[in-house]
Length: 132
Image (cartoon, rainbow, N blue to C red; front, top):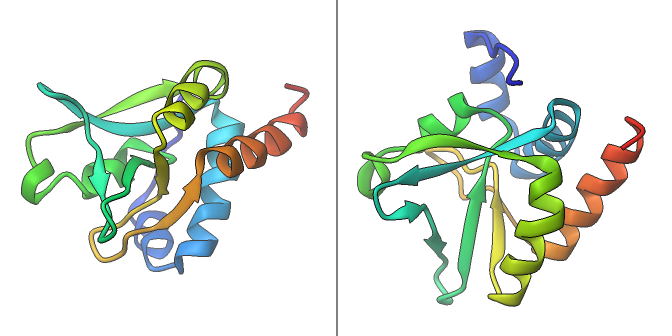
């Protein structure tokens, strides 16, 4: 259900501050019914912050995820996650495993690190606008 991201939108969104990219992520993921992670032969990509906390990175579109598939993630590929499955199944699992979510990293920025609960709440609020 992805939409087309042209070069102009891609470059301008990557240049936005992390907080604005977070809002873009919420709106786009809710309106298109999916979010994206990076996946490879060892499973889903997980990031660790400087304090040793584990983060699950997510993006609103495969092109943005692919832009981060470099260095240790260069063999990984974007994979979609249905938004209802994320809210109902992934959220409890990630929260139970004490993960945080790295929302919309870029090659130059770590994105917004948020709690699983906050992301769920924000996505549900946006989804309610679509009668979800």
